[in-house]
Image (cartoon, one colour):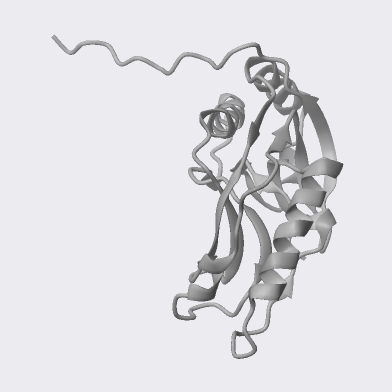
Amino acid sequence: MSHALFPGWRPDAGGRERLATLVTALTAARLDRAPKLQMRRPDQWHATLCFIGYDLGHLVTPTLLDAFAGAAMRIPPHTFTIERIAYWRQSGAVVALPHASHELQALCDATRDAIRRCGIAPAQVTTQPHVTLAYLDRGLDEQGWLSDIGCTGEPLRVDRFELLFNPGGRYEALGNWRLAGTSLPAPPRQGSLL
């Protein structure tokens, strides 16, 4: 069992339809000689915003939940589009990668900062948000057939995030926050050294 704990975004009904279209294209593009895909279920589709770690349920405190509520107040609702499908050799993941999205990265950074303000060191911060659609074996050569998959289509809406816990094979929401910001926070400024 995974027992993973992390803030994450899960697609709404429209987003699940959009991702289902990509999965259909992924399945159709797989050549007979391509390795077998292990598909993720629609209820497993998510983007990890910042990974807290494993077996850390004791960290889910009112202070952490309040910190995530504060993060949600600073980031506006937004959308992102999928740029391409990629294979990550180290994990075997087949992922949908979004076009660069300042808003989505700001949400990742805001959840990271909320976690750190609670005195928690996240196990991994997110610098490339993605949605895992399937798995192949780890360590395979480049999967060139993935570049044939067209990713144009409707944007995916991000208007909330959740604190997700994986007790094994599914995700349970331990908290849910609607994004309510009106503009992105200003990037931090480093003071002059002289």
